[in-house]
Image (cartoon, rainbow, N blue to C red; front, side, top):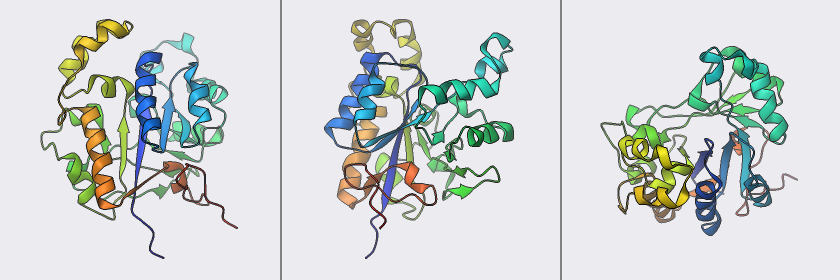
Length: 256
């Protein structure tokens, strides 16, 4: 039997407030969509995410303090280890800002991760993506859409084109709770809202109302397009060799 085409949703929490993160989770739950969520911080909503069989948790370590010479934050080993203590079940990592190095990948593997998603190659590059094995033992899973990076993409390929073109290429999308809530279409909108990110009531005044342009609109459009094309949503963890594709409830299918 021919396997259906699949696409994959991911999200970096990026220290979003609980209200903003809950907004994103509400949409994922209402639409029964599998997603891998890369965690930056502790929040009561971790319990909600863990209770959802369609959600998997990854780690999103922040190496910026080390790059800015703040040794009080610990070294790169501790940066990864601290998040693995928070999310011990994580088998996949993506660095904040995609900070990448061989020693970082080795540390992910040492912390029992099986994959990373640190490689962003935009759809507008025309490069067809596939996961591949790395000498560290990790499976590297590149992705081709990021909501904030899309704001700077001069080509601005449509949401629908991301799914219609290059049907055999790997299709991994990445979003952030704050950009979904704001429906960010320009980084100026995001920048102007930053002073009130901790004040949910005031933040609502910065939401982009467009139904066509913006991160949340993009998400809703690819969701509709996937349904039109018969594309299923999967979990990127299933791209790791030896892991079975997930069923409709996000659980791995039995392999015998």
